[in-house]
Length: 190
Image (cartoon, rainbow, N blue to C red; front, top):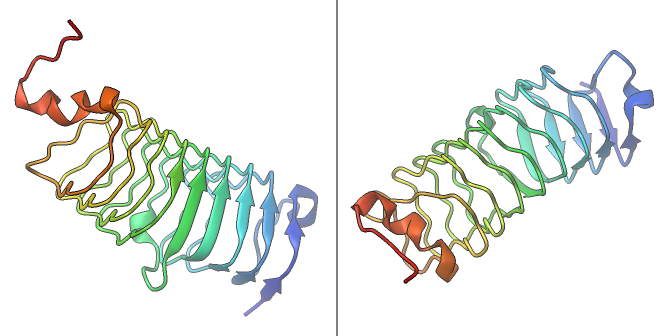
């Protein structure tokens, strides 16, 4: 089992062989092309992914523990297949379209200014999460716990309060239509 720690890894460091170690601790991954990469079973602890493209990477049984994603492209990632023990990450200005977080416990997770179109958040626990400034167009909220979540500045969401737990969630006044659109109520500004 190869363990790498306290390194900054760029494209020149990994070449065409990809990420070979099975565990990474306190590493920063910068501007890597990891599209379709096989990351199954790898362990990332206290790591940062910055400006990486991990679209459609395989992350089955992958461990993300205190991992930060900054400006990464994570199209179609199946986070719901990750190892759930100590699962902890945050996202800043990432593209998470078509990703799946279905059924995960993500209490307190930060999704700040991310694009999350058609992302599956059904049956997830997003208690006290921040989704501030996110584009949630066609994101799936069904059986989702959103208690205390911050939706201020979020766009294009559609959340049925009768099918999700939204107690004490925070919304911007101009975003209330996303809570009422499924009721058939017509909202006009005059």
